[in-house]
Length: 468
Image 1 (cartoon, rainbow, N blue to C red):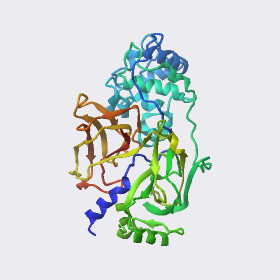
Image 2 (cartoon, one colour):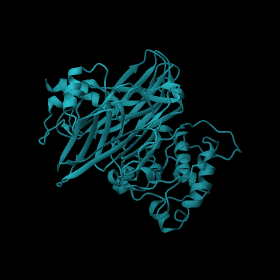
Image 3 (tube, one colour):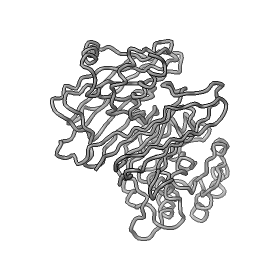
Image 4 (tube, rainbow, N blue to C red):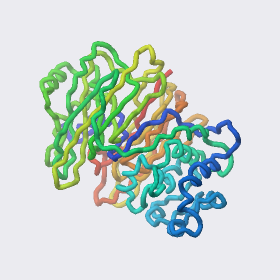
């Protein structure tokens, strides 16, 4: 089998990928909305001022204080809006990265707003690892913002960061949970469902270890998954649980059964060469669950679940990266929580849109575009991108229909792409679709193509939807 053929087969291992390692918790929200909310007329920005800035920020960011002078940012009510909106931060690294303190371009401004970066405690390892010169998570020396406070600011930026008007339901502030950093830990057994566990296993020095592990489920009836929990030891690039498709040859299943007892099927040897025999399974893989987040707890929307057919077999796929000179360890737990079939109104389908035609010339920036048109109406409730280390921007636009050209997703971070939950779903009619636009900076001296290593490149949009 030639290199291009097994790489194309291998892309199936990214059947719905969208996640990377960082020490934080991602508990996906069930509601995403920027629709104006009914209420008492207090503007969303005024609420941010009284509930966030006044309570947790102005002790430092008041005119004349050393913190305000150092940051050139005053957040008292008389000047805070003008201080923030479409204004460059004083931080040199953030300025060079093109950030505003708060941008006013809606969704496109969220990940380009320095304020959002600085208060996003759940993503703090990204800040410290990828942007160490941005400074510390705020508020300094205090507890992180509550999830409700953070959501209020995030949704306000998505709505264009207006000074007046109610653009976020103030009830988001009822969520008073806060991020608490957690070390890797086993997951408790689900009350109803399946637990998967791999490891500990060794990851050699200066090596990317990725492998498959065969796991029969022995389920004698269809089961439905409406919640997925995953806990990964640090160093993970991703973990995916694939189901082997119904068309998998019985002889291949028999081969995997013979390898079942603790046999790890590495896809690369210690020299980085692909092991073709172990890549052949990718042609039968169907994504079931996975993440790049070290601790993920995702709930499907009410009445929506993934179906696992009777007598299913899984192929588990961890990918760990060790860039040190010492041996490290990988380990993972995954809980697949089940729900009674009578509670399922919509069976989830996997969104998997990819571009394999990638050629990025050396020492230059390149933008690739690809449009996908759907042949039937679909309701998309989740989207997330996947690319590798040369990606600088990944945008998704509606293609066709009255919303043609509307930006519906954007990511600037290849390692930590946002997982967008849409409730209500994004409904696209037959003949409509999505346009992917991805910009890469190839700083190397070689042309980059599609490939499985982080130094190669990819261009995928993943997620989930249901049909009528």
